[in-house]
Every structure is written in C-alpha cells, then in structure tokens.
View 1 (cartoon, rainbow, N blue to C red):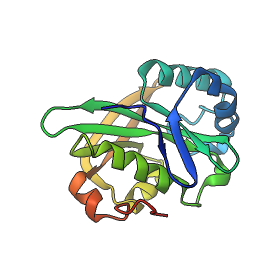
View 2 (cartoon, helix red, strand yellow; view 1 turned 30 degrees about the horizontal axis):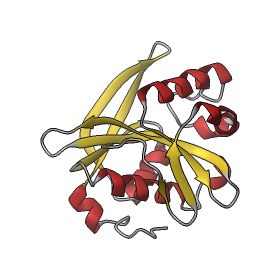
View 3 (spheres, rainbow, N blue to C red; view 1 turned 135 degrees about the horizontal axis):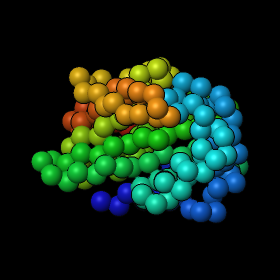
View 4 (cartoon, rainbow, N blue to C red; view 1 turned 135 degrees about the vertical axis):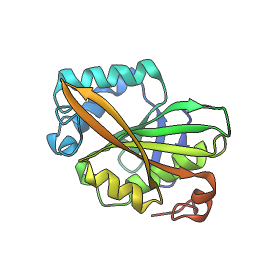
Amino acid sequence: MNRQPILENERLLLRPLELGDWDGLFAVASDPAVWEQHPMHDRWREDVFRAFFDDALAKGGALAIVDKKTDQIIGSSRFQEFEPDEGGSLEIGWTFLACKYWGKGINRQVKQMMLAHAFEFVERVDFRVGETNYRSQIALENIGAERTRRTELTRYQGSRVLHKIFEITRENFAAGPLSQPDAE
C-alpha cells in the first residue's frame, strides 16, 4: 500500500509531506487554538512542532493538505500502522487543520479521500483520539466511525494520556455517510 499517495477532489489536494512544507505547515500549527483539546496541547510551540514534523517525515505516511483555491497548506494528516495480515488494518490520524477551515466540511473531504484509498487495501481503519479531544470524537462519529472498547495509554511529559480508539470497516464505509465521493 502506498501510504503517501496523491489524492484530490475539486477543493483539496493531499500530497506527500516534504521538508520544504515546514513554513506553511508551522504557520497553521503555531495557532494554540488548533491544539486546545489535543492531549499534546503545546504542539503550537516551534520546538515541539519541529519534533512532530521531523517524526512525520521520518516515518512516512504524512500528507500535506492543500487548498487548491489558494494553493496554501491548510493542515496535515497521516496514514500509519499498516498491518496487512488478517484482512488488513491501518491507522489514520495526526490530522489538524487551520481553524478558519473548521466546520466547512474540509475534514470530512480529507477523510473521505483517505478512507477510499485505504479501503483498496485493508478491511479496517482505526483512529486514536485523546479522551478530552471532544471535537475530534464528534467529527469521527459524524463520518461514521464507531467507538470501540479498545483504548491506548501513553505518556506525554510525565502525564498519562488515554486515547479512545474508533474504527470504520470497509463495509461500514460503503454504507456510511462518506460513501459518495462528493460527501460534504
């Protein structure tokens, strides 16, 4: 599976994240409001975001989200944790958008394109969301993701961080709210 495809619709271009995207992406990420519900709420700081950005480049799977009307980077998302066995699974996550694009159907369009690509290769897509990131939890429910009983406990700056795990199966995607390419 290609974890860094070029995906596009009428409004958006998703393309592999590149080193030269730093300035444009940090301009988005440097807004503290982007991270206010995220467990790593200090990711707006340059040193913290630099580590996040470098990790994205090193691990692969990271995509820049570009508004085709303005040719500006407006966010990023990633394909990670590809497991080809037993029908296959993949994680989509690390998604963030510039605040001015919230509530305009952009995240929905990004997830529709990414899920359509993923389901060519896997049966299930997982999403890990911080337990207090209610905005992302609601967004996932709105695109047909279901919360599972699975959780993941990690640590960040010495504190415990609980992530809830949501999933969408290929079958549920085909019958769900994102089944049509023009889903808004």
